[in-house]
Length: 380
Image (cartoon, rainbow, N blue to C red; front, side, top):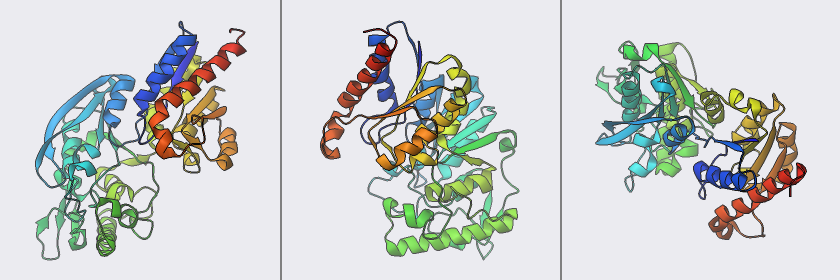
């Protein structure tokens, strides 16, 4: 038998690699001769490079770039697909953990992300995957753009590198100096949220507070992103402010479109394309997936549903093992191609208690699922 193991992480409890390992162990216990293919899912945030390398093989390249405060740091990107594709996680040089007790989205930059993109392009890759998430920034990708040769000018005609607190000072943007290395590369951005650039549902209001912004700062940041949106429309001839996902990671989603010619794509679709999922499942018997909670967010095309829709085209059984499930949404998940949903929590316990037993509960649940499959084949 062939099993495909492709779970998302259970946020705060188990990584996707840990979940794959538990599933693999239980399958091998009951079906020692079976084949398993483990594909830990990356959502674009921290750990995405490692997840891709684990899934398809590859190497990590280390490079010195700027951190969120323009200080030198060692960061990295992944090279997969025989060196044809690079994977970058924004969090590796612009992530929230890097600012520690210095949270201030008015001052932080994505400059290092632009340096990583250029370093990857310099390796001769054909495609770059950029994961958004976990950022400490609110600069609309201006820092990354500046690293790639794009110039920003204030009303006095002076060139500067905008940060979250100075995007309001942008008068015009000159795209002509963009590094020619980028012309030869397809850039795909992993983005699982659909927030616009600015406004009540935009980058600053929704994500600013977790980056250290108080109410007054949120308003200031939002005004800056509005101004950036105007300057982008003037420079490119296109208003992208309401495109879903442009508000992701401090409006980095907008910057990826405007400055890097990237398209935004759901993370799971990027993963499935990269690992050649449609080919891998051709002779598979079962696909085991899962996520921390199956709810209305899941139905927007996140991991479980993204996998189910693809698998459904080949009439493959998809079993979702989840931390918890919203009963109102399970029926819709079945309609979208999920065969069965199994929450792992065995006793009515608060999450503060059950989270410490997640690995154990997952192992019990997977063991029972495999036992059922075995019994269905006439084995006991």
